[in-house]
Each structure stands twice: as structure tokens, then as C-alpha cells.
Image 1 (tube, rainbow, N blue to C red):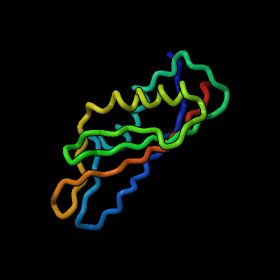
Image 2: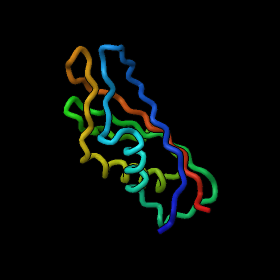
Image 3: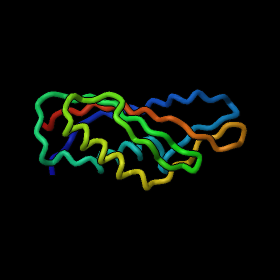
Image 4: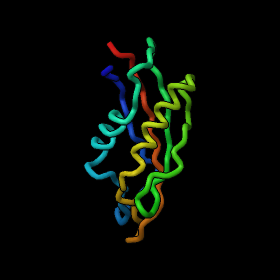
Amino acid sequence: MTRIFFIVLAVFSLSLSAQESERAMPGGINSFRTEVAKQIDLSDFVWNEPFKLVVTFIVSKEGKMENVKLEESSGNAEFDQRILDGIRRIKKKKWTSASKNGEAVESFFRLPMTFYPPR
């Protein structure tokens, strides 16, 4: 199996006060990053330069990942599709939704990623 090296930075665009809570995936953000790495199949994809892209999605009031989209392309359609497919496979995992004033709210998640070629 080809190892992939990449950096995943999660940017939370929802601004929350002390009375509000962040949404979270079971196991936390590191668990999410690990799951993303497991689900992306780049085993037969060959590249020599780093790829950068940004994926966005919504965490619903019910804790479901929805509306997974590519906000910023890597410039390679096949690479982009493999990343989107991998992230969409995670959709079955339920998140703890964000809350505001004790009520569950929908939240936005922005996931910038940089993938470095295997060594």
C-alpha cells in the first residue's frame, strides 16, 4: 500500500460565544484526520508535486455531514474526485452538532489540505 503524506488543517468558520459549543466528531479532530487519511485511496495515483485543495461541508443539527463540496481545486480533476470520494465515505459517522443557547444548530466546516508526493 502506498503511503500518502499530507497535512489536514481544520478551520472552523462558526464563531461561538461562551454559551455556545463546537460540533465535534467522535474521538475529536485527530480522529477525523486519521479517518480522512484512511478513506482516501491514492494507491495507484502518481504525482511529483504537492497538491492543495479545500473541501467544505455542513454538520447538520442531527450531526450528519452534508453538502460535501470542493471549494478550491487542486487543479487535477481526478485527484480532487478521489479526495471528495474519501471524505464522503466518512459521512456515515455521526458528529455531535454545535449548539447555541442550548439548541442544536447547523455549522459550516472548512477543510484545507495539502498532499505531498510519496517518498
